[in-house]
Image (cartoon, rainbow, N blue to C red; front, side, top):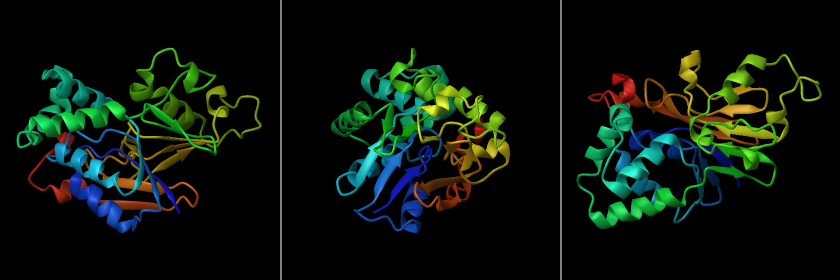
Length: 243
């Protein structure tokens, strides 16, 4: 029985299937997806359908990312925010052209049921982006931080290995949880193609939407599984590299 955290997919169904095959996923594993399932490569709607079916025979936890919120709003209203359409949303709209209205409603319910964060029995927090309250996510004043904040990761990176948990300057935000798993900010921005660790924060977004791979990490062993580079799996597409 394993628990794996999985980074941002961004419409890359081929990478997702490849990743799960390489990780040898079984029905005894728990899969915690960190959000941003859509927007980028051409199979966003197909990713959502695949995840719905996967959850029927695997224990899956789905965290909602900022791109998922934009897509959910579009499915509900039929109107997409310009910023969303310019950052992968248009590709998502196209991916839904072959889907019936009933399927779209099913997907809307799937998005609606996603959690903004999850805390497991070992006090590990799973969240798409971050939070700012020194008292933890339950005390966050603005839930938008859950899917847009980058200061949590920036703070952890800045502190790096210079401080330990017992230090008087250890950030109060990080004291709330044993470990924190996030996506949202691609590690390729820091010239790393695998999940990164800073203090007790693990960033699992390895840039699948751009020039990176899709990654999963075993929470207990820290073993990493990865797909091929997504742009190699979709050679005739740009993904989010157009932005």
